[in-house]
Structure formats: structure tokens, C-alpha cells
Image: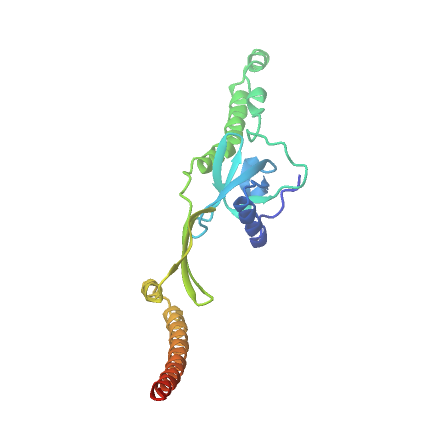
Length: 228
């Protein structure tokens, strides 16, 4: 199975949408994942990529571990079999010392055994290196608070990972301006003040129009009273 070259930005977005819809898309580990390359797992969560590059949480076997997009690729259709262990570790069967005593009896040279032992140690190093990555603790899901403006209303929403903590609710313009004041980003506060200025100007024009209409009505009422 060709594991691909890692997840693209569009594929990560597609996975995020699938998780929001309640699905757990399958992925296959690339060569960058090490000993588990070619195995299939299920994405169960996307954490905050700004906190860690390994924000794609994958379940394979009994493990749920974070990986980077470069470690994964979209699994092809029909890839349903998942292997829990990276390898069945055939090395211990090749290195038993059962046959060693026969060689020792025929050619009692100690260097022959010393040359075989380092080979066993070298083949065991890659799994140990991969185990260090698997021990990494799972970080908390990222928290996103969104302040939005649309159709003359300011709304605030909160989301942690793929779970919505607070649906968008309306806030006053003054409260929105206070929230933006906490964000020290050039241009953001100016944009909010420009929106509020436009709304203020429209409200003042509408008030002037209503005052003019009210003045006309009061003048008409005064004429009607004088006609009695």
C-alpha cells in the first residue's frame, strides 16, 4: 500500500468536516511514521495545530496517539484491516542461541557468537525509538472563541475541538468593542470602529428622518385643533 506523501491542507479540512458530522475517517500511516508505515487507523479528533504540529489524534489498535499531517495520508477505499503491532518481531526467532552450542562444539571460537549479538541489538533499536514517540501525552483540544459581525448584529461563539461549547449569541456593540480592545492587532480595532461609525451615522439619519416626520404630524395636529 502506497502511504502517500502526507495530508494536504484541503484533506485536513475535509477530515475536520467529517468529524463534525460524526464520522471517523480512515487514514494510512506514511513512511514518516516509522515502523507503523502502511497501517490503517481512524482519526478521532483534531487538536489545535498552533499548540503542536502533531494535532491529528489517530486510533489504531488500542492506542489513541497524536501525529502530524506528514505522518498520515487518506486511506484508499477498501482499506479496513488494521494491524495493532508494528511488526511480529521475527528477530528473536533468528537469534536464539539453540544452534549456537552446536557451532561452539564444532568450532569453539567465541568471536563467532560475539558477531551475532550486535545484530540483535541493532534490529531492536528502531522499535525503541518509535516507542518514545508513542509515550507522548495527549494534549487537550484547542479552544476557539469567535466574535463575528453580520446583518447589523455582533455575535460571540465558542468551540473546543469539534465540540460547540456556546452557539452564536448576540452582544451589544459596546461589548464587542471591549473584546476587540483586548486584541493588540493593528487594523482590527480600526475596522470595528469603522463599522460602529457607519451604524451610528445610519442611526442618526434615521432619527433625523423620524424627527422630521414627527414635526409634520405635530403641525398637522395643531392645524386640526385650531379648526375646531
